[in-house]
Length: 360
Ligand SMILES: *Cc1c(COP(=O)(O)O)cnc(C)c1O
Image 1 (spheres, rainbow, N blue to C red):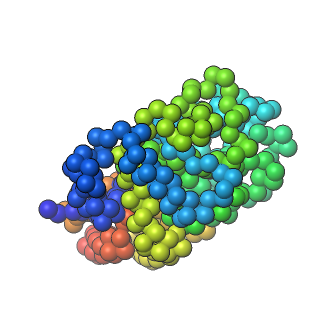
Image 2: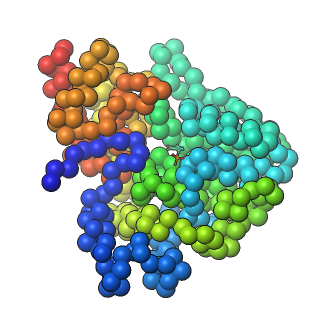
Image 3: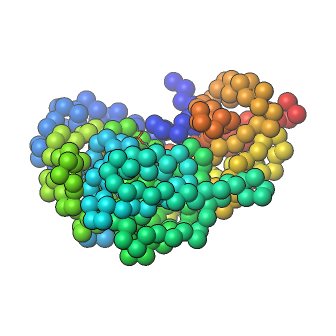
């Protein structure tokens, strides 16, 4: 068996130790004689597993007691609708900071439900590099302010949390969730689709402050109503049991690694190494200003784009896959989530060095 370094933006690499453990207990979950995917979500064993996963997540992120953790379905895009259906119910106004494709799409979805105003914050500086404005004004009576903490497509990460004053701040953290510590108390709500950094596709984790639960529109489907999910411990309907189990294994893996502080150190080391090389080699170029460069998703370009196909083909032979950039942006993108080891990043840099030397 040969495993490659897979730079996919999502679904993406999972920690190998986690997959081996899941494989070893797949047919017989801890002596039950059944697989974890074959047992009822209401069985004693499953309920215990689910509760332990939530506890571990709360420990990792230091989630305050006045926040609920929900294990939902419908992906990130489900939350593009669920957030306004649950929260756009006071004045019906919300301010959306947009910094790339995902926040723009979230804003477009929110327009269905109320007065969602776009505050476009990304711009190109004189050097042609993408930046994000900080001097943003929000409406006093906005029900919430929304932003995307890491734009997966263009590789723009906001390291400073926007100041929304007293308004609840909502963040899509799908592609940076658990890559570093986070002060949850600064937010009204955060959510993350699991398939980037946590588990197989099918699970969405929502962390929401108590006072924002129980405000949903009448039209909100019950499976998207935070109050119903919270009251039923996310078991109003059948949850994605396998994903929840896998997420629990990943939380344990993170704890054993030393928690999110340690994870962040590794992520800084990996991204510094990759950006350091890209910045020093004329053969490649970057599109984002240094202070906004994502530690998770690294888009880059070959200055001679006619070599793109050759680059991808040779990378694949070298065991480096899914480097093709998003269709909107073109070029290349290396996603280096938690599960990508430093060795994978080193192998990529070595390949890029050799490729540039040969072609240039
Ligand atoms: C992937 C992604 C989404 C969409 O997630 P789906 O689960 O495919 O709906 C939303 N926001 C961000 C930041 C993402 O990276």
